[in-house]
Amino acid sequence: MSISVGLAATTTPPTAQTEKPKVISVWTHMLPGSIEGDVFSESVSAFEQAQSNYIIEVVPIEPETYADRIIGSAQYGSLPCVLEFDGPYLYNFAWSGYLQPIDRFVSAQLKADFLPSILAQGTFNGQLYSLGQFDSGLVIYGNRRYLNAAGVRIPTFEKPWNLAEFEEALGKLTALPEVEYAIDMKINYGPGEFYSYCFAPIIQSFGGDLIDRSTYQHATGVLDGPQSIEAMQHLQSWFEKGWVGKSRTTDDDFYGSKKSALAWVGHWMYKPHAEALGEDLVLLPPPDFGHGSKTAMGSWSWGISSNCPNPTGAWTFIEFLLSPAEMLRMTNESGAPPARKSVLAQSKLYGETGPLHLIVQQLESDRAIPRPITPAYATISKVFAKAVENIINGADVQTELTQAAKKIDQDIKDHQGYPH
Image 1 (cartoon, rainbow, N blue to C red):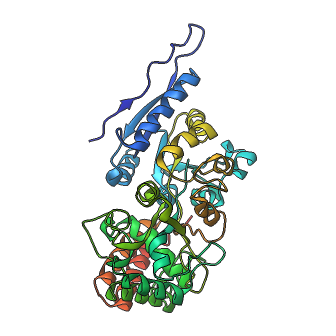
Image 2 (cartoon, one colour):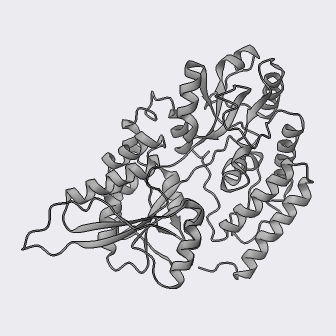
Image 3 (cartoon, rainbow, N blue to C red):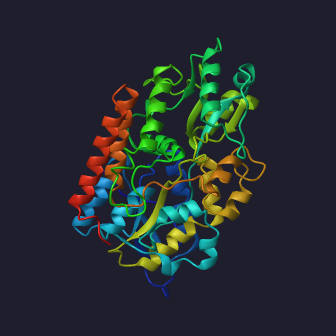
């Protein structure tokens, strides 16, 4: 059961000559007590203190139940004005008619300041439906001391490892006496959305994908095509050779016990990694497995529901959240890459001399691949994650990917191809 929290209702009351402030309802996955939740509360307070036309009514909802809550409420026409949602789930919400486009509110100048990855994530069927305060980034964190001890070249954005170099590095690093296995790929996160986020770029770098992106009408022949199969066969072999850890119970093998030399994970692990490894920490791009280095992107973003009675007020609040000051307020605390280019330049973490600038280079290039822009994404993510889980545990790669592709195709068929 969610709790409605009216935040910062201590603003100066409007004068007698002004209208009564309008209430803008907002749903968010950022829970009170979390880093993001506390920062968001500060932003809400700042918004209410900066103007007297709107009061924000916030309902925080557990991330695990958030999508189901939106779908259930949409069927009864009881959505709030402002919705937050994980990027790729936008497409199903927009296709279902739960959201309204925000193009009319977004100036050309504002749009030009956003990362191309954020615009790609927020666009469906040619219309912009969402913008977020931050993006995300997938990298390899490395222990410089181990890399040097093993005689492994430290790759750069301009020259990432190729497949042979990567596998040679995994073998050499695992052979170090201090190292139990070369790379932590965060199997402890479990087979959820992170598996799609983490492992799809491997398939894409081999030349495969999760679905045919020319029509978004079938996964068969793509997800279970030869390039995708080759990618997952290599992934499986890394586990079989003991190069990747299978631990379900520990999260700190790279930065705590230091029994792994590399960690394949996102920006959110930078702070604990940096605190534990200090100058030994180095950020590395994902390898180029033949079709370029590829990385994941996308994160939670803001949109306006189709039944919002005051879309102008809803946008006024979203626009405030997207302002440089509020974007920096959030990203300085969360460690996520700011979604606007001008704000990135001000960030100590992501500016040109910042320790996480590699993530910006990836997001501003063609290496950052949006998760499939289709209402079928929820099904794609679920069945792909399950296939990866089975492959890690030794299942036949061809069988798993073919079964996953058939389930995706059936979902698309069941929805008549998700017509626009």
